[in-house]
Image 1 (tube, rainbow, N blue to C red):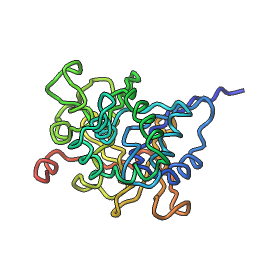
Image 2 (image 1 turned 60 degrees about the vertical axis):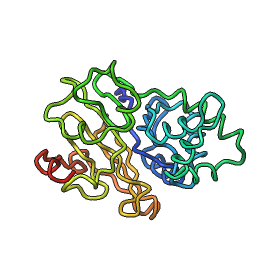
Image 3 (image 1 turned 135 degrees about the horizontal axis):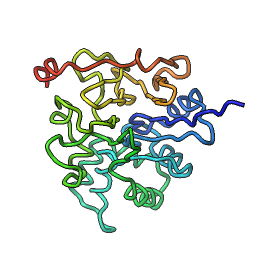
Length: 249
């Protein structure tokens, strides 16, 4: 009997779209030995943040901290509410997250779980982080400000940060890069962006990347099951031209 290879599957920014996530995973059909990795921003904007967190938490799936997780952590520090940080989080989609919880205790319990999420996951050949890395700094000198929030300095790297690792990111919606259509993945120097804008009215695409079989699964959360598409990784990727990026940002 031929031994099957355990799959590694990376899920883009879900942003509270629980039903879309379930449709996507139904298509991917991960087995018991397959591993799911979430690129952060499980919460905010969509209607089902509490369900998304519950699913990831109860199934012990791997997830890195996104900037929206960082926003909620900034709002609730040391068992106290930071009023200005709370307003920033609510304004950034947190109101929908609050509405998805039945009571404050359940929300605060999940905040403590979110606090345990790592800023990055090193898988040897793949380095998973929400936003990227600062190209001029060693990893040990970086923190949430870089890993959860960085954009332009990382995207404009002319050389890969790691010589032997692919950095997989979310955070920046891929269609905001020049020449990239809604739903396409964005490929830069040593990095691959899989945040295809599930919450955004211009897109709606939620992405699952199976790096083992080199397939990309996508569902449009605004359309439903009929929108499911499965592409080869080659078909799904659009390479970013640094010259175009420099003039567009």
